[in-house]
Image 1 (cartoon, rainbow, N blue to C red):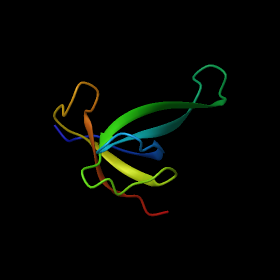
Image 2: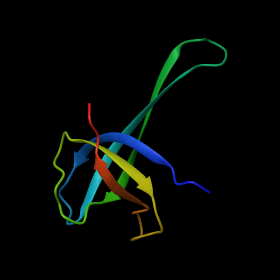
Image 3: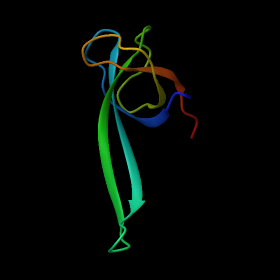
Length: 79
């Protein structure tokens, strides 16, 4: 099964080797046909502590690294 890859913005880098990434998705409401924005935060492994708040990054699923970390940073997303 392929690993999911998501793109989001770093909202926190205070923990060692961990960043919090806010991923926003947009979809059309099935009944109202209005565009809805939903967001979710993921904790991702950043081994080199190279990403800072405001960076846009890509994260991918991985085996559990800690109690809350199930994602790792792949690369910085190019805009």
